[in-house]
Amino acid sequence: MSIKIKKYHPATWVPTLYFSEGLPFVATSVVSVLMYKSLGLSDSEIAFFTTLIMWPWTLKPLWGPLLEMFKTKKHFVIATQFIGGVAFGLLALTLPLEGFLRYSLVMFVIIAFNSATHDIAADGVYINSLSSKDQAKYVGWQGAFYNVAKVLSQGALVYIAGKLEIIIGVVEAWMIVMGLFGAILMLMGIYHLKMLPSGGSSTEVKNVNEAFTTFWKIVKSFFAKKYVFWGIAFIILFRTAEGQLTKIVPLFMRAAREDGGLGLLTADIGIAYGIFGAAAFVLGSIAGGYFIAKRGLKRSIFILAIIFNLPDVVYTYLAFTVPESFTIICTAITIEWFGYGFGFVGVILFMMQQIAPGPYKMAHYAFATAVMNLGFMLPSMVSGFISDYLGYKNFFVWVMIATIPSFLVAWFVPFKELEKDS
Image 1: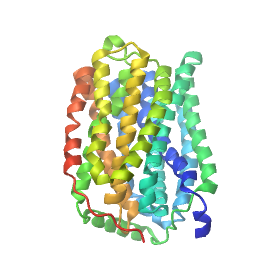
Image 2 (image 1 turned 30 degrees about the vertical axis):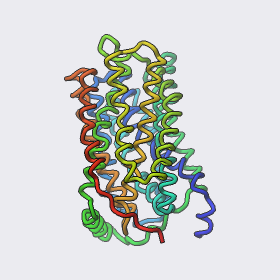
Image 3 (image 1 turned 90 degrees about the vertical axis):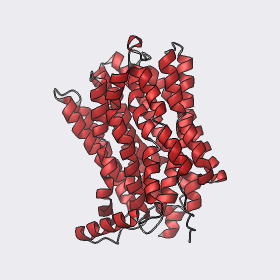
Image 4 (image 1 turned 135 degrees about the vertical axis):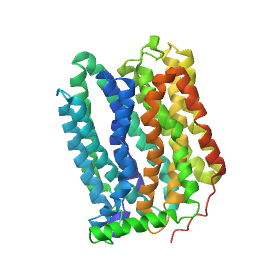
């Protein structure tokens, strides 16, 4: 059994696994913003509702222990990929309905719960199948392909939606695009049937009572970890400014120039992200992974925080200059995505190496990612109201101020020694 698992090189499954993890998350958190903008919702409504439906990524530790009762982590990965594919298909069918908003939001919630479950199992496969050395080696690829999904979603699929909006209409365009999300997830499920390692059997938990007992053990052992509260502060504050930026940037790009936006078409955004953002993010993520591998995470973390927050400067510049040149806009997006890719690997590796190690690695990593998502989600939820109140220019200035806590926590966070692999 172990020989069969080991013959698949990480390069054959790490990229596709994290591409599959990123796709539904980006569709829910970002692409939905552009879809609802095209369908006529206001900025504050969009920011609020598209953040509200992301709660499952924060709540996922509550049902994580139940995954220990059945099969292997590979089974959960594949099952949720197929369920996700069906759910996106049903989402597409809700868009022509009269009450499309509430029906589509319900489907997004289902997709979110399913995807959060997928993430727990996928991260379990990664952590249990790779040594600490290989985790550091492939964390750049993990981050790169998680966000290749983001770039594909905001790039190619948004571009397709933009072109189809003109040709066949807004509703029909987004029905096709949501259907494509589902088809891609189905294909990933088929591929992983053969290529994915098992990630370990889930045999320790025999029933629901044991699952809840295990959950409380997980919680207690999590908060007993050395420097855990510093770690929680780090993973919350590192992304606080980004959480505000992410929801408003697509709306800023789409908003009319007389309203302070860039006035881009949906297809323009697809080109900018799909070509320039894609290359920049992959390069940034891989470079960030190798940068950490060479210097070590402790010596790298403050530099990563600086580079991670480059997008805040970029969008402040765009808001104040409102350039008409598409070349300037694409250059700014290239800087944004390189910085985001380079810096984001730092918080991922911090959770893997400083928080997850111990007898419940998968659960503690899921717990850490849930806390990180909470730090991302709460600022995102109110970002639309802040942007409406301040206007785009002052909003981006505010986001730059909001980066200060991330610099402070990156400078002061203590590190513990890494455990050696047996």
